[in-house]
Amino acid sequence: METEALVLTGERQVEIRGIDVPDIRDDEILVETVANGICMLEVSFFSGTERPRYPHLLGHEGIGRAAKVGGKVSKVKEGDFVVCRNWARHQVVNERNVLAFSKPPADPASTIVEPVSCVAGALYSYNIMSGDRVLVLGAGYMGLLNVIGLAHCPIAELVVTDVKEHNLALARSYGATHTINTGTDAGREELQSLRSKPFDLVVECAGIQDTIDQATTLTRRGGRLGIFSWHHQPRTVNLGAWHGGGFTVVNSSPMINTDRSVSDMERAVRLIECGMFDQSQLVTHRHSYKDAQSAMELACERRDDYIKGVFLFDQA
Image 1: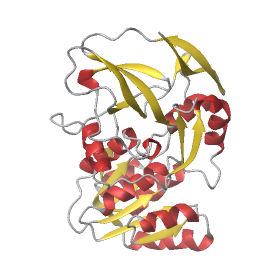
Image 2 (image 1 turned 180 degrees about the vertical axis):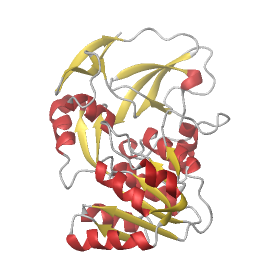
Image 3 (image 1 turned 90 degrees about the vertical axis):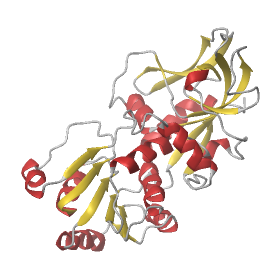
């Protein structure tokens, strides 16, 4: 069969193209995509910060419905909601790679799994200790997901910084004990003053040079520095300060599973279904997949009211 997919054809050029979907085998599932998140990885491909080979099929944060299942599939039945990948209206998933929800999500657009799985793995890698003082630098979409997860840990203090007051208000609602607007002179002075009382764990979520520098001066001697952001260009770090401070530096790559017995994706589904990761206030923009070009331009612009964009595929 043929279906429609969003394909990057060049820098800042995304098109709807017809692609072939193979017939499913006995161990496969045909998935009808319902919603799929716009990740900063796709934005970096679109903007040209990262350069894939063209044409390039995009997407990796999908939620869909099982439309047809192979004869030997036992974990999923037709109609179940499952995790999928590409920005395509239909896709084939092997049963060994599929994760199903226990019941249909009330709002699939705010039930995106893959980003939560990144945070589930990161929380393990941070080696959180009871009573930790924690600083999160950056309260964008992924920073706020980190705040949600960290607020459920037995920590004593959770300070969050950002330049958007609305995002900081969300951080407080998710459990931040204090927030600092580093877009103001007062906020920058306050952050500077915290050097005298550095943190046990600093999580860098902004992906810019400034927050790397801030993290270096705000991690206590012997503390932990979590680089959560994917930096799409080289950065300068003060290795002397990192060495002298005896930091444990963790790169929370989503491609490194922390526990092979239970995948981070499975853990994420559990956390979403129990209600811990409610993303309803984080998904600020919903787009028909037919509006892909304007949606990606908006994602690049990242206005003050923008946190997360999601494509909807079941509204043709």
